Length: 526
Image (cartoon, rainbow, N blue to C red; front, top):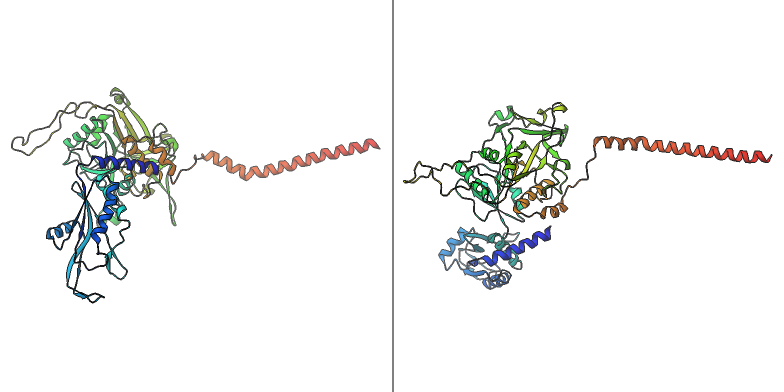
């Protein structure tokens, strides 16, 4: 998997470099009056490393040297890029040379297409003395900066603007998710309230929005799908809100319903997310110190029976966990009319039920109903094929604040009423599966692999899930049923002693037969 990923990156980098219209600029900012070790011939040494880097990057690099002491504008630019400014008082060097007070800076900036990366070459000793660091690995550092600028990986759109999970928030957002898929994809944020979805985006992710989408924002998403785009929608039916002030200690967190407007559009496509939370007897069991085991019914443990073996996303997985997920129902008749199909990617166990109405996420507040009312529920589905536009029979209302169109309905182009290419739409009733509690830092847990597989599938990389599954950190054997466990336990406890007794009886029986045969033989000789 790592070899394949590396090869894809190399191919992507070569393609990106060959397509560059303008050169990548590497600028050394170094004040000539900076009295620190390592400044001698710094320009020549950095230039030599840049030339090595230039050969590896198809001569797409342009080098510049700016001395902020001689160029005041260079000082402003360096500060804008965040290069540190060093200041020193009047002092005398060990050689007896007097250095006047002043300030200066040193650092490297890599720029392309209004984006930049800063490369620090300053180092500091344990005694607080500054010097220019070792430049032997500068070539590799510059190559990493160039990779970040030219976006060698395919782009995946991440919709923002309605309280979605923040891809930069380590604690409560989806930062782990962004890092995990960063080995193959660049996650690009798209503010759907302001921007259109770019043409070079093949897949968008809508991860846990908290507020209503306007009609025109839904129109943007709908038309993206009608053009043959792929969408991953991870939508929460409820959000847990912590009480404020003194009520925080008196009342548990409230589960408030979430309405985004996406529900109606999905229902039009044939997918409906229930206003409920799926509870499951086959769930995660937390170990509480001093309290024993705590059953988390709203965290279903999905075994192989609940994972589709007909789709590459889950084909090579054996167990994952979902959290605070709503049920999903599909109108297969509607999909068939539109020449689309559905795959039920993730299902709960047959021992599940729905929590509706007053939702409670306290682990000790749930009691399973009678077994006769338990059943299996869909937790994630994948719709593929042709879909009819949500705006096939209507046009979105757009309030354009201009003199000519103020207060009027206005659209720029006629809506596509039917998808022109097959659509891929992945829907799950929770966004918790992208949080740090579910996805590990290394991306090797089953849930991390599951989410990476989803993005791979939507991007058309159908062969990657099988390779990635080889590195799973948790890949259990097939789980044994309780009946089989009891039988095996009984054999180990009672079976072995019975075998010993039977062996003893058999030995005594054979010994008795032998004794009788000997007695008969000698009695005939008398």
